[in-house]
Image: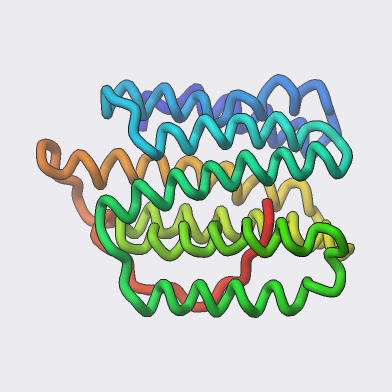
Length: 222
């Protein structure tokens, strides 16, 4: 984890920018969040895998969402859809998730879209497709390890907050809540994936066994 201190610095700058409303700090830091983790992943894994591809897509999504407007939002959603599909591919190749996890997250998908449907307007269909990929990714993460499962759940929560905002329901401290959960999600997914896939040569101690199925957590578009 000591090798990840640059990520801590970038995350701190980003959260400071969000808290203070500094567009400059956010432009300086947010596009670097996923790349710093990508460098760490490639240093350890020494090859490009679907999680690495997902981090590349996440970088594109982060940059797109720094731009205001519906077009940029849809571009960002498209990039994050690519990230979810890449993560899902990696997790399913590693191990199949418990059926109860898949059923729980699909129930979350149905419930969240029913609640937000009438408020999303023209974003309904993009959100429907994206949120399905997101929920499947979070369910698949349960089959990898507890750390990756937590990261998948936090990714879903972060995107749920964005979806609620798009539907006109913003929670207090919206920006910080979105970015804190998102930053934690990227960190947990990356480090959890490194630990889970290094088991054959470097066993990991506790915390990276397959996780039990989570309770329902609603999700929608990032």
